[in-house]
Image (tube, rainbow over all chains, first blue to last red; front, side):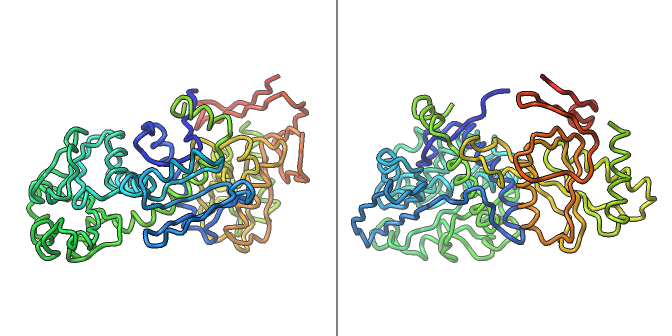
Length: 290
Length: 167
């Protein structure tokens, strides 16, 4: 029997994870879906664990100093406006740290639930053509998806206005489409990103109506594809801006499955990290999780 | 093994006073196969018109040793056929040893309803209990000491039916 992969102490991003570690989380998430259908939707695996949700809002930069050890906190879920915040914290405390979004860097659990939802729908990820549409430049969801999808063997493309495409993204082996029609012709799956409305104020796009007219995912555009394209969105949606309501609620949308799978994936991550033994965490630090 | 299963099937029907409220719950993994076989034997024996409901239970998330053993790589399927309230649930497993698996299974079943009775049926009781738990129906009782292992193989998963005591 080969040694099964472990996750190490923290989940800060998908960039440095192995495909085996990603698959371990997806496989562990499967049985948690059934838990969500039980009359009692809880299991006692984490009984007695103290978990802190640490959500820093951009507007309330209160400096909080937590005496984590004194409070006997086992796990910290952190969202922070600065890229690298989760890793910074994880390197300084013994508790497990889970990144729930750090700046423009990563949002690993969102990407993991996206991967699980794609795998459920298509039975595989390898070889699928997945296009991330919209504000890739500012999107940590896009970045984590990109790492996860390429590690599991999908072909990845991005599509959106040039002002919202990161420079040099082609170097990561990603196709870039400047027109949504090209993306639709190419893709099996469209993951439509949320357009932050303040992007317009800051001059990245001329107007929301203009954005919808040029990049909006509409039934009329999808009809031109020979395939039924799977539609995803990490939410919350701006209906009538990046996505048309008829598409969001249409037969090929798996947006509601994403919501359901989000719970299962996050339960799986908590479970896997909580069970991580100290010696496994040390080994992971030395050798990338073997 | 087939004679033991046959006898266990008969004893289950006796214990449950028939098959009306009977539900067989196998513990992952080999208990699931054994429950399936016992259910078929009961159906044949009783000439049952309706199938005996059977379910599967993976107790991983109810274990008390996550901290020391670490997470199990793959958690098996849990599937409970309908509401267990007022049913007679019979837990089926291959080996009864410390009783900790059964403790976890009892906790988990309680989250699916309130059966009027829960019984325990095991193919091998090897002693060595660490909790006050006992089986209602036993295929074979074997005296063992810590360090020994009882391996149950079933046709469906292992290609043959066999019980080994490994010293």
